[in-house]
Amino acid sequence: MLSKEQIKEYQTILSAKTPQEVISWAIDLLGVENVALASSLGAEDQVLTDMIMKITPDMNIFTLDTGRLPQETYDLIEKNSRHYSRRLEILFPERRDVENMINKYGVNLFYESVENRMLCCRVRKVEPLQRKLSSLQGWFCGLRREQAATRNRLEKIEWDNKFNLVKVNPLAEWGEKDVWDYIRENNLPYNSLHDKGYPSIGCACCTRGVSPGDDIRSGRWWWESSEHKECGLHIDKQETSSK
Ligand code: SF4
Image 1 (cartoon, rainbow, N blue to C red):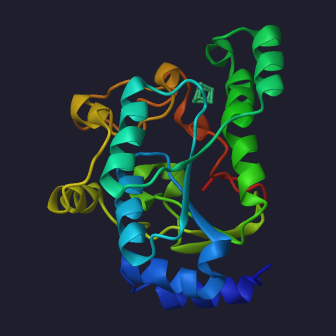
Image 2: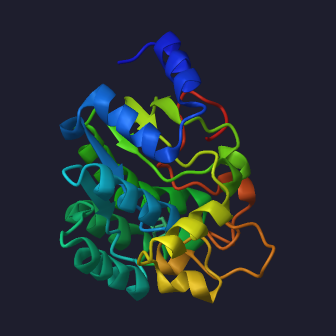
């Protein structure tokens, strides 16, 4: 475990570095076998996948299949396989946990209450991620500060108190234009839902398109108020507010 002082020092070192430099630096620090990219298959993670594949194609890149993803996301998984000539690792929730949850609360439990929605996110996303991260020393995420009020204090490197490892956010200070410029300049595959008004994409049942100018995460769990709009993957348990 890194001390608070070490993390502070690393944050200073990384503050002026480009995303590619942050990735290379973190790999040197932790070792390629001890880190992985958790790809949500969103635009930011397509950028990180490409940067990582160009720096070190040996790094593990994985995604979570909740069982409720849009078809367009599955199509992107296949496009990625062809583009990079390799498959992402795909993690699934525990079958028994899903069965117990659905049989107790129903297939659309997430619309009933914030508690039910958080339970579903925990079973389908957080627990599979936790299992994976327990074998790693660091993980890369495509989070950006401007994505949400809950992320405006994001640093390029942090200690992840929830999962007990280093969390690296190479795109922390990028804007949306930077992301899409990179995708277009490098001709990367991306989720076709982005062209239909979906700036942020999660499970099909919990994501809808937004109007131009709307908050980019307003289509996620749109029936909830904004302070709840995290799925539990990026909430620091030692903080009172989510990151
Ligand atoms: S986004 Fe919706 S369907 Fe997906 S895990 Fe969370 S609550 Fe369940």
